[in-house]
Amino acid sequence: MVFESKSGLHINMLKINIYPVNEVPNLEELADILSYNIGSLPTTYLGLPLGAKFKSIDIWNSVIERMEKRLATWQIQYLSLGGRLTLINSVLDSIPTYIMSLFPMPRVTLPKSQGGLWIRNLKLHNKSLLIKWLWRFSQPEAGYWKDIIVAKYDAQNHWYPKRSREPHGVGVWKHICSLLDEFTQKVSFKAGNGHNVKFWKDLWLGNTTLKASFPKLFQIAC
Image (tube, rainbow, N blue to C red; front, side, top):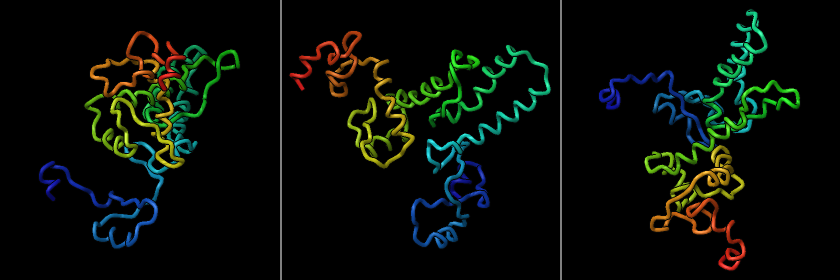
């Protein structure tokens, strides 16, 4: 009631579900008190799969359906090969962009030398969207999601996250962190007081890391 009076928004209890993670005791009683329905994972939240395996092909079913609808309308048009390629590059590859910003996409194209049509490289597009999360993490105004990552993985350096070495964890974030080496190779740092910069491994002096420039000295020092 307080939320509704302050925001002017009305909460529709019929559309609210409670999703248990693992085993939740007295779930039915809790749902009855809150007047919530009991849902099950995986589900969809804000257009993204929630609770699904991040490498599951099923994640992309909605994307495939949307593409099939677009292709169905194109089939009745007389388009040249060049026209079709233009539509694919300008329309179809924009459809999965939202999901590609969080999940790794299965390989869907081939190079022209192997029979491909030279469609835009979605793998590189996907990787750039995922790496952008590492860039956001380095920004001071990243938001509460960064605070959660820092607390969960005990990250001491707030410029980039700490890698998770545990066999279990959030697969999406672990996959994003697997791109950390590629990310750090493309950025440089200002040393400042040195608290948040790795002396040997970060790019802060010149065009290469000190580890790469002085490998023998690095072995002695470390």
